[in-house]
Image (tube, rainbow over all chains, first blue to last red; front, side, top):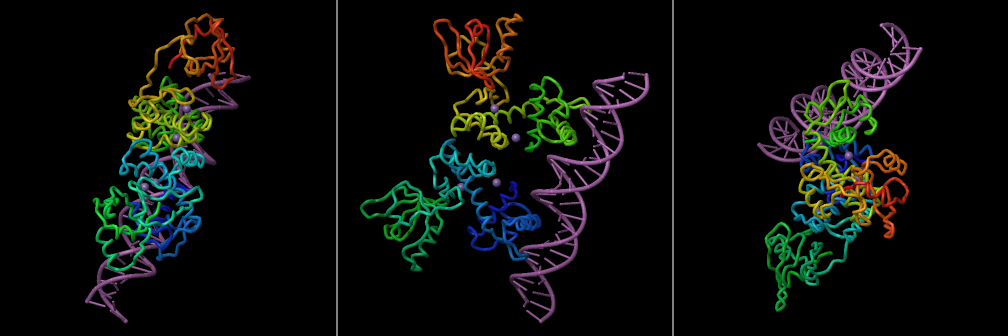
Length: 218
Length: 218
DNA sequence: AAATATTTTTAGATGAATCTAAAATAATCT
DNA sequence: AGATTATTTTAGATTCATCTAAAAATATTT
Ligand SMILES: [Mn+2]
Ligand SMILES: [Mn+2]
Ligand SMILES: [Mn+2]
Ligand SMILES: [Mn+2]
């Protein structure tokens, strides 16, 4: 069984590698876990021996299939507990991370199942991040233009309809990128422009033209 | 801050000493914690150095005021989580102990406060054990005869009105003792006799005479 | 390409919590 | 009381996760 520390390392590797897309450096892991590179080398070697990460000395680490699955089950618990804390206990979305960081390590598969049911099978956590299913799979919803989304619903930017560089530059300027979590606060019916919240940035206005070309999920 | 292990030891000492009433032997602690006496000696010495237990070599250990308070806050969390698991997640009362054993160590005072509120400030856990308040105090309710209790309510036997030995012997015979958790399942109005559940034993019938002389709390 | 700087790994140490085996103390039994 | 048995403590070892300091590998700069 994985220890607390092992689970935290696995999660860090998974996230830093963009869900397993590329290898992760020792220093980067040390950084997010607030530990020293020497400790990371030790732990990565251990996780490699156990088959949870692939690792070549001096070349960084990445999660294996087994490692990604384990990481995703911890992430699932983390996000379900965050939903519990916000929806049921009235925490604010910015107060729950540290507590979920502890709760994610509770070992009991049936607890996770029952918690998921109790919460009504949520698909995203309070920060808009998707909740993996019981097999560690992230069910990605269909991509739709932001103009098709109802007011108030939180969505994640997962693509663009138009890839011209001046459009992309504009998105950059207004702090929208792949993965941004957006909530529509208001829609002006006469011109289709809208007021949106982007998590981490001030509320902004965008034109219908921009909204039409932004693909979002959930 | 107390470690996981330290909290478990403190709780064991607290319970084995009957809430601090007497000293506890090394072997007894090793027994309940499924560890070896040598480990207990080490840990008790550490807790003694930190002021959580009083301890004289070869003479056993007991919780200090500070230790009892710490133990009671862990017990509070344990029992609140048990209520959560049974009331909200639909666990059976005999399935929750192991999970609560993990959850009791989550560190976040505000989480406990909010959980308590969410659960409606329960005063007993699913096993009928009292839940200490935020100061680690167990608020003992008034003692009333069992005949004054409403059907369905779970109560704890905390005394007797009549101390004659044949009454006490009778209680013994039907497995009722101080601390027994009783739920009234049915009351026969014509003679005041009742059908009761005693946790850990089969359902039994008792006469109004017995119920009148049984003092219960909660 | 050589020198320099950065990153990563190894070596060796520490603290926490555990264990086994042996020594010390206390309790029980002729 | 003296011998035997049981309990408890100490001594020394182990595992886990961490650290610092030094060595090795890689990357960057001149
Ligand atoms: Mn964590
Ligand atoms: Mn989150
Ligand atoms: Mn515990
Ligand atoms: Mn209980």
